[in-house]
Image (tube, rainbow, N blue to C red):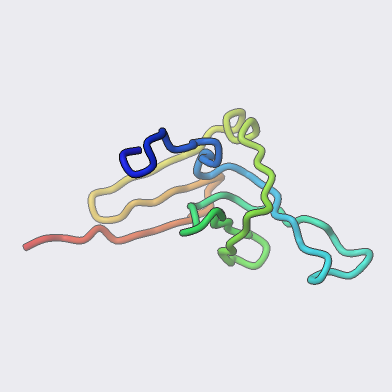
Length: 105
């Protein structure tokens, strides 16, 4: 805000854990293949993109061409469990992201 003299846009922010569909470009698919893959938002990329977890192959991909279904997330609810050493985000009993907290001595 100080750098550009205006408030930053928040339009691109989405709810972490939201179900979404990632567009598959025409160069990466055949004529009868699916045009989108289902995934779950797990974070943001350094640029304009999003980080999406694909359950079918257990990979995290980066994409800008994403359609979100945040209303489904709010209908289903999220089960979250946080312990002292490990943060876990659980969605429908699937562990999506697990990070160790750094301990200072």
